[in-house]
Image 1 (cartoon, chains in turn brown, green):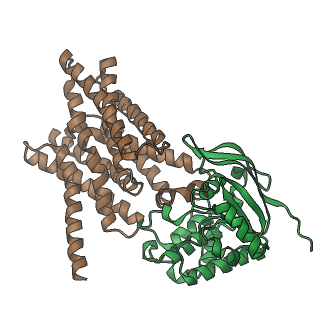
Image 2 (image 1 turned 90 degrees about the vertical axis):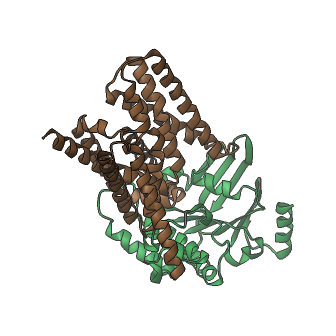
Image 3 (image 1 turned 135 degrees about the vertical axis):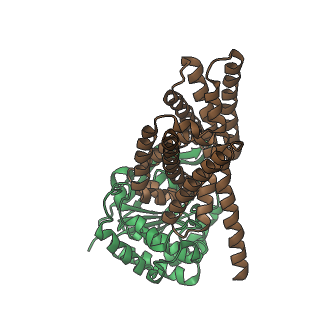
Length: 277
Length: 241
């Protein structure tokens, strides 16, 4: 009986995480935020680690909150630095990513050297371990996912307008800054929630790949988002399935690998189609 | 009828730039209502910076910009903006109809409700005016450069504004699009409204406009375009030197 409960939790979590990360991926790709996705996930590490060090607290939610705060800080840095036209954007982003991540690694080393109990939790964040979800409070995540999905759903037209023409939207619409910030904030929260499943190192791939693959096969933003969600949910389910079947294979990397393979397959078949035309 | 020469735009002491660089210094400029005004100047003269500061896309360092004596934020609805074409992601999956509809209502306010009926009417009206109705369902990246520019102007028309601010609307167009846009400029003027556009090509300025602002870091000339060829030539030489 317990195993069914465990499986049910795992599948429920996969579906809900897949939905919110699918939304995020679609939006991030059209906003050209691929690098930012990487920054957000890597920058969560110092937040998680230092909250753990400071409070010796193993409560997942407190650690996630720390991660969200440092991710938000890195995002603010990233946007601020773009104001300076003399600094190339990609160098600036790479610097911010390394800055936050190395701080996190320093903290991790301290934890290891001190031999504090509960390091495995931190490792779960880095490499991802979806099983850690299933033993936790599933309803909390489902509740969060529903709110986030609702926000993405009602702001759909706004996402489309900002993504197509940010300049015009800023001039034309009154509350656009509010919505842009809200969408960014919600994206950060989604990424942070997903970190436990996919891991800090591979989260970037899950932000880029489903949206990019979906874009190849869609002629509207609506379809693109829909496919992006389907691909992400599918990737989560494949990840669970494979790691349950072959206990040597970790879930996180499989989840990250699946949308990349889907992307490559679509790209390959489209090429053939174009050749035939 | 004597026209009331109200100023649609008045700028005083405007200085802008980014980082440490100053692009426009201490600009003062008044543009009357109901003109077709071209902003002309060499590359790097600050035409686009000026346009972007008008709509608050660019932080000003100093100075005042007023539309009908009001701040931009208070009168946003009445001002339609056409950004430069190259700034947009043209491969984005969106149809012509959807783009034009962006101008018709404030999406950020009516996010939960259905699209207002009059927005749909305005959209179709604007599509017809720009001769784009047959392309409504087409994807924006299937259109030619000139057609894309017309979509941008249609989006501004759908807003039903009193002032149209356009950044290089006539750059790189085919003859048909040029004609349609020029006709729209006339329509806007006839209905008592105003166009202010950045224009790159001083040779064609007389074809489309009846008011000219020459700038190169600061304002060199601001007035009606009823100048003789010689006067215009002298002014242009002064601007482009």
